[in-house]
Length: 115
Image 1: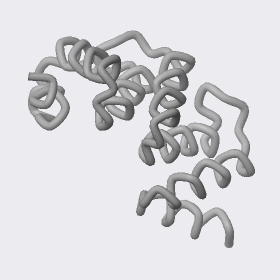
Image 2: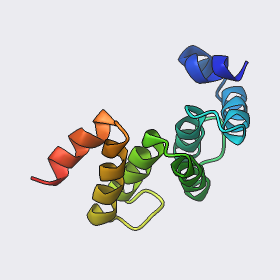
Image 3: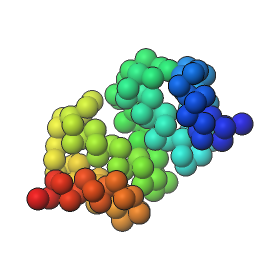
Image 4: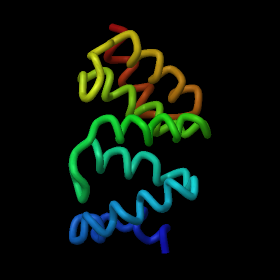
């Protein structure tokens, strides 16, 4: 059932509060793809009250299991200064780890930031 909430973006658009609940339950069960989903929900206030610190908490939990998306998305937060002090150096560090783990988005951000 949690898989359905993670993979079905229509469900998230139509019922964001219910989807966020499933994302959180899935992340608590360490379903890899759920960490980024629930973190983004908290970062953007989609289906839950916006809370950068909770978003960061979920990214850090994902990082503990080497989730490349967690490194990448937290890097984006540092790059933009969303909920953290803006830091190009920290963003690059996180993007490098995400890239090591195979995240192609991180590779693209590194190319832009390291020009």
